[in-house]
Image (tube, rainbow, N blue to C red; front, side):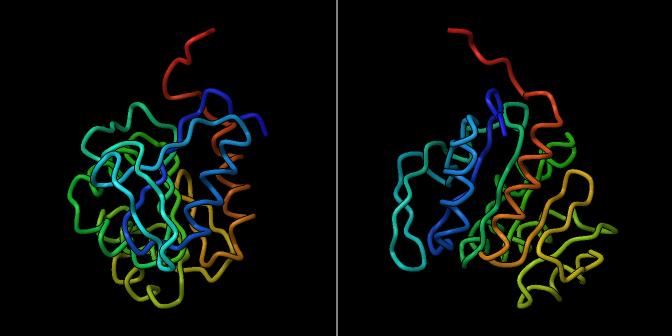
Length: 183
């Protein structure tokens, strides 16, 4: 799918799940989207659960919803750190309020619950955080991918093909967040 002109933020923190960061990061780049790893601090290296590094391209303090078409929130243990950062929650809320794609997989349901954007919406997540989503008001569904308007959720790494397919479809259907310089 042609995603040229689209810009995607992939949130990162220590203890992220490897595939849930790298699969979307590389998949959307392959389709022409500009993808950026966004962490608490630009230039900092964050280690996955198994020690695999990712360097944050941008700081969460320097990003704005108006500049992105989608935010991808990976799982692992990283969402527990991400949801404690008010800047992350504000960014996710702003993306949601603007109708931009908000995509979360696995334990990333924690971020959605803390951002208070799942109330009354259908969503899925890893079974260990199912109760957190339900208590935050979500209508839980045990499916490989759930699309509820601009909210796209999945459960586990094996759901990544369906998860990324739905993100790509949503991105292709919306105008780009910003103009791409012609060159």
